[in-house]
Length: 384
Image 1 (tube, rainbow, N blue to C red):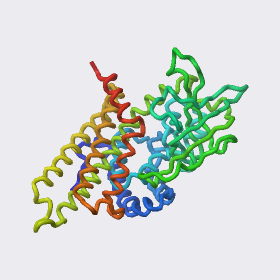
Image 2 (spheres, rainbow, N blue to C red):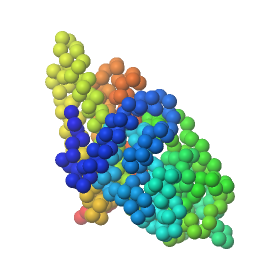
Image 3 (cartoon, helix red, strand yellow):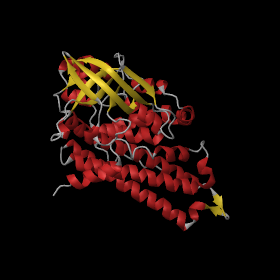
Image 4 (cartoon, rainbow, N blue to C red):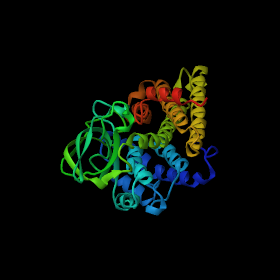
């Protein structure tokens, strides 16, 4: 069963999709259970991905990357997440947030910070969420105050991928306090992780995506040079909004990969499990469950790839990105739930991939904007 055929994929993205599939089969899938059990950071697989030229290559050729576009990154996401979500998230977070600098930063910033990431000499991260604030981008309290030729950062950030491992992070902080302009009160900054006053520790054990490490960051009078401001002061919210349109398409790919894994596991199990004198796929109720899983998956995948094209063309990108993210991640949850049911008692055994998929699918419905928030955006941004 090949649910991830390339008929929906633009022709220019098919070669990179095949590269990602071969890498996932060789490096990700065989190591998935081990890393899920240990919860260790998969440095060896990340380095193999760098050697394969599949890490941080969405950065343009001008700064040392391959210049992969959104459909190409989506194609990689489908394949990586089908193999294992935790390892896949680590691989894709190595350059997370770097696109903001490439879009809005100066040439000097890009040369100093972006190029080492594209050339796989450094990794980075994006620090937005806070312990008490997740999806409310205009409700963050971490502050950046100007003091001479420096910015002074105070506050906390949470769920920061690579917050411990990264060489630097792109950080979202409050620089204004105008109640009439909530969205203009935030800016983006480059924060090296060796900055005095920057302290990060891993968030304790997670139920899913255990091979990916997120951090809790505390900023205590952390000082950075004024030139570490990205773009214009007060433009942070709008930079993130545009960045997340692209990101949510890719998160849709996370959901598609997980859904495909659940369907494949359920299909194989149903065709090999005997009950009442026959394999359980011969029961009509089981056939209907498998049919529904496939129907929802194909619907989600078609929507996700259409949405990728819309975002690339700046055609109501926010509307399409939110729809793709919601549909694909929720289909993944539904397919994992049904897959667990078909596996019966064996579904709870950690050695069975379906149990890992079931844990992992709970996470993408939350990150990059919880799906309840996405439904608000779908309604508000729907083309008239």
